[in-house]
Image (cartoon, rainbow, N blue to C red; front, side, top):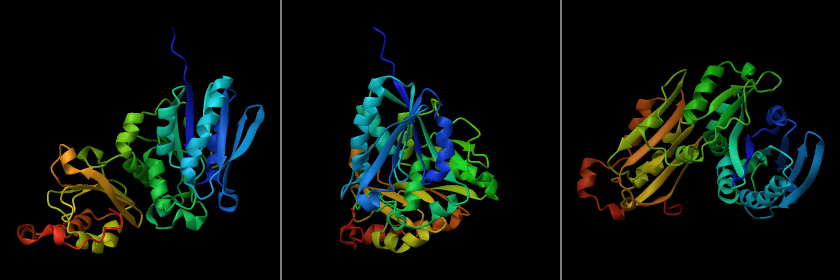
Length: 357
C-alpha cells in the first residue's frame, strides 16, 4: 500500500503584518490555501480572528476565544481541527499558515508535528524589518505595552519574541533593506542568531527576491537542537561588520548575589544570550540562562546528575558592537573566588532568585 501523501505547510511569522503581506501574497498560488490568524480583536474582545482563502477568494472565517487564558495555547488547540478539516477536503497541495504577530513558531510547529501526521511542516518563514531589527532586539518593551500580548499571562518582551522567531526560521525575509545603511550587518546578525536560516532580501515593494515557501528546508530535529540549550563552540559564527558572538565558560559556580547585581552590565551590548549556569547556592541544579535585549531570565533545567556533564557555566552571547573582553570580565567577576570556594558555606548564600527557581 502506498504511503499517504502529506500536505506541506509553510508557517509565516513576524511582528509586522504590513511587511508580511507582500510575502504572503507570493506564497499563495493556485494550489495553495491560506489560513490567516489576526490578533487585532484580542485586547478588546478577547478573541483571535481567523480567515481561510485560496485563489478563488474567501472560503471561511471565524474566531477563537481566549479570555484570560494563554492565547498561544488556545490558538494551538483551536487551529488543529481547522487544519485537519482543510487537509481532509483534499482540494489544495499546500497550506500557508500566517500566525498572529506575537506567536512563536516553536510551540505551534511542535504541536503540529505531534498531532497531525497528515501534514509536513515544509518551511518556517519569518519577516523582519531592517529599519527596526536592532532596536527590537535591544530593548525592554513588553508586548503588552504595545497591545500585542497573547492574553493576560503573556509577559514576554519584544526582544524575546523577535529573537525566538528568528531562531526557529528556515527563511528570514529582510524587509526594507534599501532603507538601512548597513544591510550586510543585518544579514550577519541574522546568521549569528540562526546559522540555519537563509536570508532573503525584499525589494522596495516588500516582495521577497528569493524562495520563501515550499523550500523543503524545515528540519524539526535541527530546529529543536538550535532552539534548545545553546552551549557549544560549534554554535559560534565568525565575527564581522560589528556583529560578535562570544562563548563564555567556567568550571566554577556563580555567586548568586554578585550575578544578580551584575545583570544590567551583562546584557549591556548583548542582543541575545543563552546557556546553562551553575549557582553556588544550588550546587546540584542546572539553571537555564537566557537574555533578550535588556531582559534576562533564569529557569530550572533539572539536575546535573541527570546529564553526562560535570557542573559548569556556559553562555553564548551575541551583540552588535559587543566588547568580548568586557563581557567576559563582568561574568568572571560573578564567579566564586578561590578563597570562597575553599571557605564559604555555599548553601547559606543569599538567594535573590528564590522567586523564579
